[in-house]
Amino acid sequence: MSYCALVPFRDHLAETDDVEFRNAHGCTALIWDALCKRYGVWDRYGYQGPEAWSILWKRANPKHERPLPLEPWEQFVLSFTYDWALTRREHLNELADALAKFSEVHGDARYVNHLPAIADRLRELAKDETVEAVGLYGMSCGDSLWSVRNPETEESEPYDLTKHDKHWFTTEAR
Image (cartoon, rainbow, N blue to C red; front, side, top):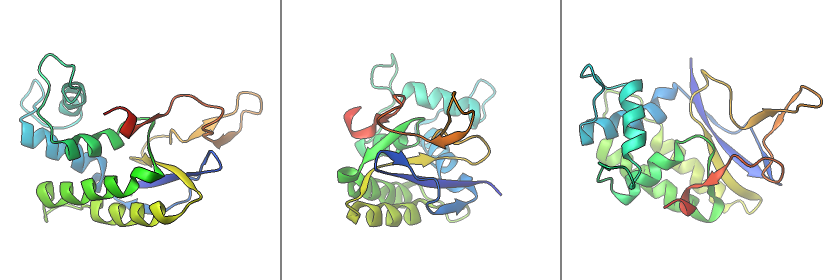
């Protein structure tokens, strides 16, 4: 079964063995589906799903010609799901609060919802002064962005904040 996981960074390195949340649809897909439903984002065939998600991601940008009127906490939660997004430790409690609110507002008891458990784990990580930031491995069906191939050794190694430059910080993009 697919899973999602939080990826804490300590000593500039991604740690890929943090808590896994089984059934990844209880994380990123839940967030994207909920926002598509709330803001009426549909694909060209009248469905919600991967094509609608792509439209959502574009329209979530405030500079889009028809931006969605996302609440600030919705925007924060959505930005956490993006590729290469990290949240610094000092903002983890704020992200946890946003995830909890998102779950309250958009949660549906008929579907798996990991957001409350993810919020709890973020609050724990916020207390750990060795944590620099936290990213998300949104769905185990693909390779983790936080494990990169070393071109010299051809081996996989943890993403390093001092060597790699694809990451960005969620609170600096607001």
